[in-house]
Each structure stands twice: as C-alpha cells, then as structure tokens.
Image (cartoon, helix red, strand yellow):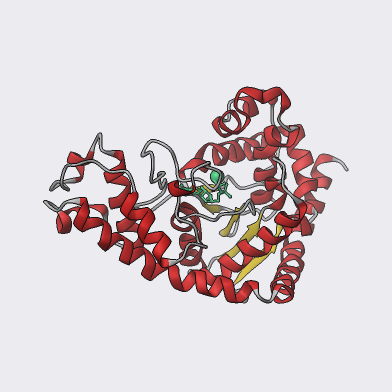
Length: 332
Ligand code: ADP
Ligand code: NA
C-alpha cells in the first residue's frame, strides 16, 4: 500500500571517508537512477548528539551537500536537504520517543560504542538517536533505506517503532522500511586495523581515506595500509582470518564495480607490493574528480545553501501532510 520511496542521510561530522562513499554515497547515486523518488538528507541533528563546534557544523553541512552533488546526485532528480530545516523530523521524533522503549535504546551497540565508559555523561540525544532516525525515514513513509552494515541495528529499531506505533493505534499508516545493505563494501574497515570499521572519528588519520585527500595522500595511505606477508590466494575462502587483505580486495571490488571473487581471481599469487599500487590507482581515478568537484562547489557556499533551501521546501511538502495525519491518529 505504500509507494516505494528511498530515504538516507549522512552526518555532517567532518572527514567523509571511503567507507561513507562505498557504503552510502555511491549507492545513493545508483538508487537515484531508478524511477523511485529519492530523498537524501544531511543529518545535522544527529551530528549534535556529540559536541560540534558551530562554525565547523555549518561548514560540514555544506561539505556533505557538496559531496552529494560531486558524487553525482542531481538536485533536480533527488531531494537534497538539511534535516534541521524540516521541523517535521523533530516533531515526529518526539512521538517516536513516546513509542520506543528505553530498553530498546539501551541495547544499541552504536550507543555503547560512542558513549564508552561514560554513558551517564553522554547526551540524552545520543541515546534517543535511533528514534530520530526512525522519524527521518518514516516522516516520508520511506520504504527503502540504503545504508552501510553499521546501521543495520538502527534500521531494525525503526521497523520495531513503526510496528509498535501501528499496533498501538490500530493502523497501517507507517511502512516497515527495508535496509538496503548491498555490494562488496558494506563495511569498509580501517587501513590500520582490519577488525575496526573505517571511521571519521578514528584518532589516526592514516586509518581512513577521505574525500578531501589528494592523490599522493591516497597512494601513500594505501601503500602503508596494514597487510600480511602472504601473497593473495586463489579463492575468497582462503582470505578468512586475513581481515586487512580481505578489506583491500573488497575496496577494489566495490570501486571497480566487480565481485570480490573476480578480483581475487585476477590478482591471485601476487604480493601486496603489486596489488596496492593497482588499488591506489583505482582509488585515485575514482576519488580525484569527486574531490576536485567538491572543492569547486565549496567555493560558492551561497549556491549550496540555495540547493538546501530548495530541497527543504520540497521535503517539507511531503513531510507535513504525513505529520498532520500522524497527529490526527494520536489525537493531537
Ligand atoms: P560515520 O559512521 O562515518 O560517522 P554516518 O553515521 O553519517 O557516518 O554514516 C553515513 C553512512 O555511511 C551510513 O549509511 C553508514 O552506514 C555508512 N558508513 C559509515 N562508515 C562506513 C564504513 N566504514 N563502511 C561502509 N559504510 C559506512
Ligand atoms: Na554510522
């Protein structure tokens, strides 16, 4: 009964990584080319669940927008906007705060990771984050959400919230949104430690490739990436227990649009001394034009703000009737 609609978002918390590119941005562009309506948001209200310097936040909001456009999102084909400019997100999030249970939030592994030992001192917003994320999706009655593997648990919680709301109010108003976690790089790992995800917030900037790195920096980070002394084997199965090697093969596959199997077949028997330069060249070929286009767009912040303002109007036009109907269902 719900028309297919795609929603996803990225936090403006700085340092967009190759993980964000392969797990999210690149796939957002693929979805745009289908005939399903696509909405992509810069989720600044999520970013402030941990401290953000106001000037950095403003800059990073524009930078994520620039990355969206530089990667190939077209503001005429997709609705590109900033979360805080569409108040219905926060309004629905409050209702979902009253639908979700504290116990559900306490089980979220990302909260545990981000809050660390100091959970009592973290913001209430960090705990409630998944209810806001559910609202981001469901305020558009979105049915499909392209995300990386790390968001799987939050998506399950969004489905639980939709189901509980529908049950509590005896309605089928909200769809059960499907996570789209596809491709060869749904979880890009750190270049320094194959057991940790590549992240904006890792203290070592050698652990990640970012969309602001120049060609030399990318090549150097790949050359220095942690690996092991064995050559590449003949099958993927033989990469078990070699997470760093597996990660580089996955990155190669995702960047080239091939399967990891075909990459391993091509490079089997080769040492990392041969594979890494090939990977570096591929990464630079992909990322350099994006970086260049981001820099060009960032030189005109007024134009970026205009895109966001326009996107917010279009997003609000979808969200507001859905919020009105939700209030009506709740009795408000
Ligand atoms: P981050 O996790 O880098 O702080 P966000 O939470 O804003 O960034 O995530 C934006 C999108 O990028 C999400 O869909 C997330 O799953 C995806 N993503 C983030 N890191 C990775 C990674 N290392 N590999 C694959 N996808 C990732
Ligand atoms: Na994330």
